[in-house]
Length: 229
Image (tube, rainbow, N blue to C red; front, side):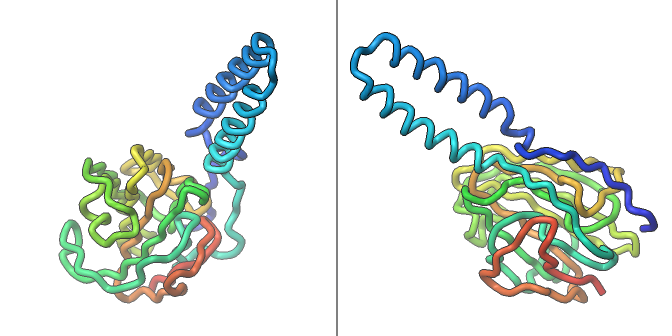
């Protein structure tokens, strides 16, 4: 695609978590101060700080957003759109858009994983569609079609079609998609964010070659999961 245009945002904490982390920290600070000042024994204070401090630290870990750059040529490569574990690598019949068989690669994200999503290929976004749905456990096969999800269709520079599906899990209640129809997209750019346990599916042409195996851990924007023909 010629010289790659990067619109990178150097952020350590994802913007989706800024308000939640700030408000919760203020609440912890205010309640902790009240417990320290107005209760003679300090046991309630230390119990509160221990419990809610640990919860805040877990939220901070969830919203972390590493600064990553893919090193090397991205032509024909498909990189992992998310941190997590490979739970599906198989040929499937995709009848929503393609009406033929596709190579499907799915990545499950646990609550401990980074939940930022990256574009898996360079190209142009053809459309973005959001669907309401159920909240089955994200690793179940039916989650791909029945759960709340967002579909992003990308046309690569050589005319191949790649579908990325953000899927809400049993605990997830919000899918954020930054991709917009008609815009060019690039590896290294954020595609979106999914809160709590969730999953990302990638549908590729059957001529693509998978470069990963079942249960293999992935690093978003770093792990090469497939090569296009």
